[in-house]
Image (tube, rainbow, N blue to C red; front, top):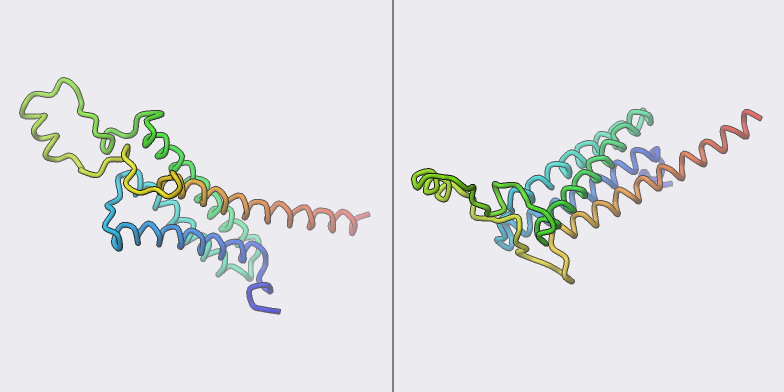
Length: 177
């Protein structure tokens, strides 16, 4: 039996969450530093939950001796994946102009500014816009890929937990009867 299969399920799921989020975050960093695509404000928002998922996943792995604690960390990692997926969906909506994004990155200029205030606003404005897609694959932007892949990973991890809890519950009910 390998070391990975000898770990309790929450620790294994934590490891998968950490690896999956690490791959997605690594991809984002590759696009930023390797390909020179500067991230917008909402791209940064999507990175924070990945960092939480990585940390919580690694803590779940390190808590292998305490499966209940590992389960708590695995659930935190899954929640972080759901959060980054939701931010990605919101970002996609901003890119397609289904709704307005945050003022800091959508390129909307506030109304009623004096000339001096407008000049100050424009010179202090960030140049990377959240409502423009800078890269896409098969018609899906990086935000869309993040949303889809993070949601798929969260779904897979949750399904594994649900399946194992049903197995555990059915074993427990047979022992009690």
